[in-house]
Image 1 (tube, helix red, strand yellow):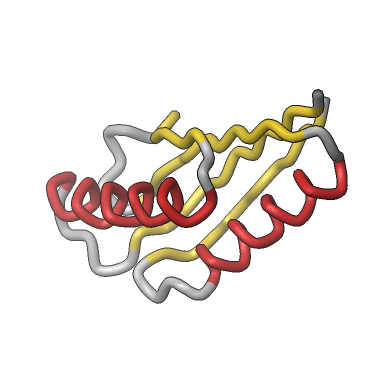
Image 2 (image 1 turned 135 degrees about the vertical axis):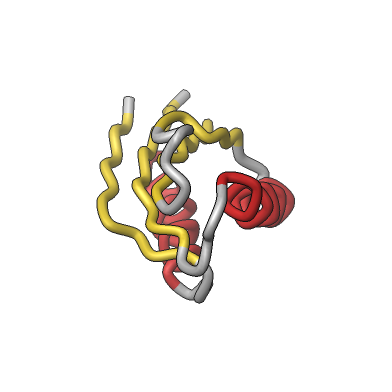
Length: 93
């Protein structure tokens, strides 16, 4: 069994309040969950209205599969015009 963990720091464009930020993040998180079958949650920067940190975890039998899934997730987020990735880190166990 192989586990992959990814931490992503985002800028949420056009968010003028925490409510707007939560709306964008909830939508993004639900889309990622349904598309990639992963565990995901907002893990930091909860009080900043234009910044967010999300954590992603996935499990597989193959390290290559984990790499593909995480790359696909990062690519999916990069193509969402509502957010911008400022930092990401990946750990595979």
